[in-house]
Image 1: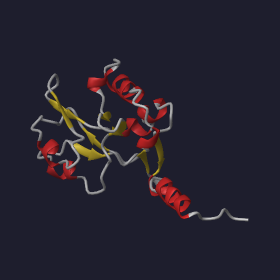
Image 2: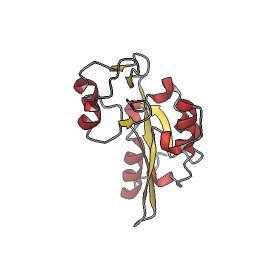
Image 3: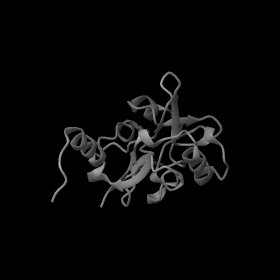
Amino acid sequence: MQKSLHINPDKCTGCLQCEMACSYENYGVFATAKSRIKVFDFHETGRKVPYTCTQCDEAWCLHACPVEAITVDKVTGAKVVNDSTCVGCKVCTISCPFGTINYVQETGKVQKCDLCGGEPACAEACPTGAITYIDANWTGLNKMQAWADKLGNQTAA
């Protein structure tokens, strides 16, 4: 069963635990600047929205990489950057329409979410359930439920 990160911005409080967990998982330090997930703060509305690589089926980053440094993890389905192959050309950052691949000045390489090998630290650290790791076929279930609630559907007898 393929799984994916599901983000519910309505539950995000902006605590940044996801960013801290990600940076610790990948770099061994608590530094939000090193996180592969970011929480955007929309000051005008007060909304906080976690955002990271969506692991696109049609992964433009993977196809754009001239040295084939981005490959698909056979277990998780994540598109993963191989640091030893990456030459830091940044073509993948340009090809990603969502801006979720970042160039890291210190290493001269790019970084993106790799789903932590199937146990995403961001989802485990999120205290409100704004980030969950669920069956990829059901990522729209909450939206369907909310729509059904708006329509006033009755529960089964």
